[in-house]
Every structure is written in structure tokens, then in C-alpha cells.
Amino acid sequence: MTHDRTIDARTIRGQGILVIGMARSGVACARMLKQRGADVFVSDAAPASKLTAAIGVLDSLGVRHETGGHTMSSLDSRDWIVTSPGVPPDNMLLLEAKRREIPIIAELEAACALFNAPVCAVTGSNGKTTTTAWLGSIDAAAGRAIQVGGNIGRPFSEFAGEMTADQCAILEVSTFQLEHSPTFKPHVAAILNITPDHIDRHGSFAEYVRLKFRLLANQTAGDVAVLNADDPVIVAYESKNRTGRAARWHFSERRLTGAGVWLDGDFLRYRSYDDEGMIPGSDRLCPPGRHNRLNAAAAVAMALADGLMPDAIEPGLTAFTGVEHRLEFVADIDGVRYVNDSKATNPDSVAKALESFDRPLIVIMGGLPKGTSFSPLAESIRNRARACVFTGSARDILRTELGGVVEHRVAELFSDAFEAAHQLAQRGDVVLLSPGCASFDQFDNYEHRGRVFKELVGTLAAERKS
Image (tube, one colour):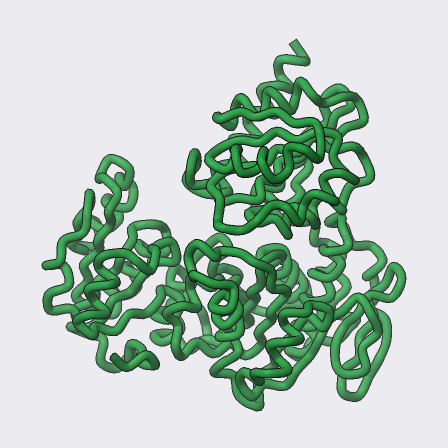
């Protein structure tokens, strides 16, 4: 099977396309393909009772579908398979499609192939959403015509057809999307960092790293790649595998000799090919933590590399206050701060969250494990946390690897874990939800988990007032 093929906008009318998955990206992609004249069929293994809204949309579009399981007949007369990010590689339809040599592409690839809009893309193990949203804030405040989405908020296929010629898409991109995006070519692309994650999906760390660098594979000399000069995995891979032909910009905690942005005391300093200076307002960044200063440096480097002047960066840089579920302050109740960091779905992200506070922490961890070890967190837990509560499917693993480090409780259900954290907390503490795991054992996604945490905090606050 040819792996570098993609849908052709000129010949899509009448082609048979199977979309796997009825999540938001799958439904958006089905709508996009249907509007372009394709013969679309959508398949999802979940029961119809859990897909009521999606089914309603597909019915209104006249798109045929199946739920409650996949049938092999759905592959018949299909020219293409489009897969949603959440569909695992061992999905029976994907495996059979490979056997039949039916081309498989991601929803992201389909949208980019049909609508040739300029793209700025961000990937990395941690910080993707914050950096993507921060770049969006910078560009919007500077008066640029943009749309922000991808793996954050709106799928690209939901708004690609609405974009005008002068607009740019700023997209968060995951390895799940890059698995099947053979021709995806962002004009400006950033790889923030690479630490072990999604090993359960990709099989090895080496494959995970390779997929991250696939973001740069199709870039040409007129494009720009923004890379973390401090990340040992990125540096090592770059030294052995120069991916794509884009110019390189970097960001770092230390002074750079080439084009890029670095931390200089409370400020961000930049160097372009013909200029050097401070970024105005960069001493007034809002989201806490040194890792967020690096996220800001990456966003600024992308903006500069895409032609924005330093003075134009300040308004959007300083106006940004963070995003939901990322070190999100929820409430202060009786002197205890409650912080929602539900997006922390791997140990490295938890470590960065722990480093962001100078108050004692009660940390709620757990969920669905992703095949990575929690042992590297031991020192940070010992230094930063007063206690931990382990919950969900990973609770026994967490207790084994971290239970001897700090006082801890174990609770199977998330609501019980929250109650245990509340009981452990004392005035001056921070109750931090930073799970280090996927959410799918008890929740639809990390947003659902974060919303439940905030609802529990709200209920507690109401009880204390009464």
C-alpha cells in the first residue's frame, strides 16, 4: 500500500469514504466530506444510546452510519478511510483496511488536503494546548485573521471550509493525528518537548519520537521549525535525523546563538536573523510556572518566525491568562486553594505542575495508566506534596511506585478521592488535581474529569457557605 497518498479535492465527488468514530472530529469530517460530494459512511463501536447527538447531526446531513460495533461490509466500495484521533491502531476496520490496501488518513490530513489554508502547528508531550492558545492570543491581538483548533477545541475539519484566503489556522497536533497525515505541511511548526507518553498506543518511545518529528517531514525551505534547544530527546534526534528542509528557530532557558527566544531573568529575549532585543511585556506573564515561560517563549518564537514584529506581540502575550484544565484556579475555600490540572495526563506534566507551587500540596493522581512509570515523580512528590490520593485504574500502580514516598490515601472512585483530599487539606494547602493518567476509566475525556472536579469544588463551597 502507498503510504503518502491523500484525498484529492478535484476528484472527491462520488468517492466512497468510511469515517471511523463519531466523536466531534469524526462528525465534523463527515459533514465536510458530504458537503464536498463524497459518499460518506460513519462507523462507531459505541452503542447508539451514547451517540444521540452525533446520530442526529448525521441524520440531518443524510449520512449513513452504524453504531454498536463495526461491520466488515462497511469497507466495501470504499476508496478512503478517515480515522478520528481516538480510534486505536488495532481497530478491526483499520486492520482490515490495511489488508485490503485501502488508504487510511487522519481527519486532520483530510481537512488540509481539501482546503489548502496556511497552518501553524504545535506538538509536544506537554504544553501543546497552552502554547497553541497563547499563539492564538498573540496573533489575534495583533490583528491577524486566524482560527484556533485542531486537537484543542474545534477539529480543523469543522472550520477549514469557512476560512478565507487571508486566514491562518493555528492547530494543536497530536501523534494520534500524525500517524495518518502523510502530506501535512505546516508553514510554522513547533515541537515543544518529548517525554515518554502514549507508549500503550505507539508501542515504543522511539516510534513516539518519530511521529512527533513527522510534523516537520514535508516542510520546505520557505517554512520554519521551532524546537526546544534544551530537550535532550529533540537535540539527539535532530543531530541524527534532519527532518524536512525548514529553517530552524529555537527556544531555551539559556542564551541562544542563532534565531530564537530565550529566558533572560524576568524577560524573554529574542534574536532573529538581523535583530536582537527584549520582548516588551514579557515580565508580566500570567500562567504560573517556569514551564509556562518556556511555552510563552515557543509561542513568541513562532510569531516572530511568521513575521510578527516584537512590539505587536506584547498585547496578546500579556492578555493571555491560561486555559481551562491547565493549572486552573477554581476556588479558595477556608484557606485551601483548589486547582484543576486535569490535562496533566503523563508524569512529566505532573512534575511541572508540582514545581509551579510554593505551598504544600495535596495531589489527586490516577485514572487510566498509559504504560509509563510514575517512579521518576518520587523526588518531586517528596519535596512538594504533603499527601497524595491515588484513584482510578492506576491506583494500585501509584501506591506501589509512590506510596512509600508520602502520606497517601487510595480511593477507587473519583468523588471519594476528592473527599479524601478535602479531609487531608489544611489551611494554606493546595488541593491539586494533576492525574498523570488518561481519563477514560471513569470519564469521557480530561475535560469531563476537570468539569467534575470543579463541580465537586462548587458543591463544597456551597456547603461551607450554608
